[in-house]
Length: 123
Length: 283
Image 1 (tube, helix red, strand yellow):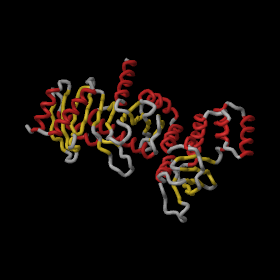
Image 2 (cartoon, one colour; image 1 turned 90 degrees about the vertical axis):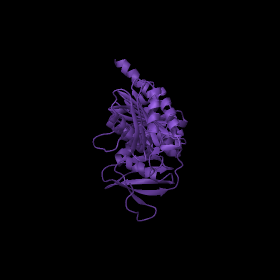
Image 3 (cartoon, one colour; image 1 turned 30 degrees about the horizontal axis):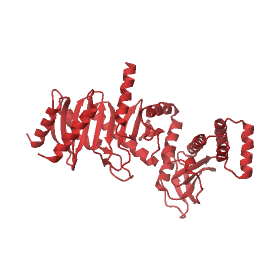
Image 4 (tube, rainbow over the protein chains, first blue to last red; image 1 turned 135 degrees about the vertical axis):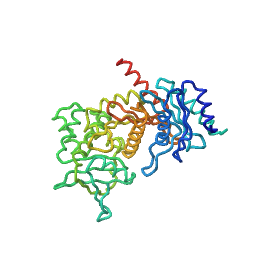
């Protein structure tokens, strides 16, 4: 298990209401790690993580600019809440937390922000 | 869209097949100067006056009396009274609308609404397949900004006139979710158009139609991405980078419309709460 995966597993263990966590390198287009709890399919989590660069962005201000990277994003659907946060000082890295729809969204985002901060500081 | 280079430096051809074409042309002027887009077919069809990247008025052949009708309905005056007021203004070279406001016959917000309605109805008459216009730079018209219209507002109003049944529902939803200092827009994607077009705008209009269009593209793209991995999305919300003014951007489907808004960090929570209340109300 890599250091990143160890850190992600530890973060998931601290948050009983969270179903999965993943980390994506947006520049390389790679999912660096996925940790799931229970029966959550890892492929589904991976697919959502791969969308992180598209979702953590805002439309450009000037017409010819690229989309602007955003610090965090939130997606809700009938079943799930996906929260995304960019790792401070390493904005290519985005962590994603997945929880059931009835979770406390504010707590999920706060927890994910802490995890992103920890990953930014390194081991 | 700007066509081939103009034959003279002061006049150039502009394709005006849609209101969006007109708005895009105005946005591309980047606020420089004033001028008139003169639309001609077999005969003169009308003109659009632009000043400081805002549309001041549009006039189309056959719609001259429409402005008077709209003013009469807001002012609550009969035809004879309006004729008298019109004659006075003509004799004294006064702008009719502002004269009515100064006399307390029409409220300023009603005049603005009438002028916007008339401008957009005229624009919709002027544009069409194969239509072109000439851009003729003019001296500044001295129009007050409060009675002129940004391209975002014009594009939304035009969409609303074409899809009137969607406007009330969209405005109710946006007024229920967002504060008056946040802006939101409702878009519809119809079969004959690849890109979604706005049908209603709430709050302070963004600076240009181009901004509206970019936000619509972002929203559709984000919602499509989520649909690919998460099923039917309820909402996509992002925290905006510092320096963008607003703090958050949200997009969601509502009754066949895509709603996009820029607002404070709690705006996503308000949308979700309202959605939850509706579900509980139905259940």
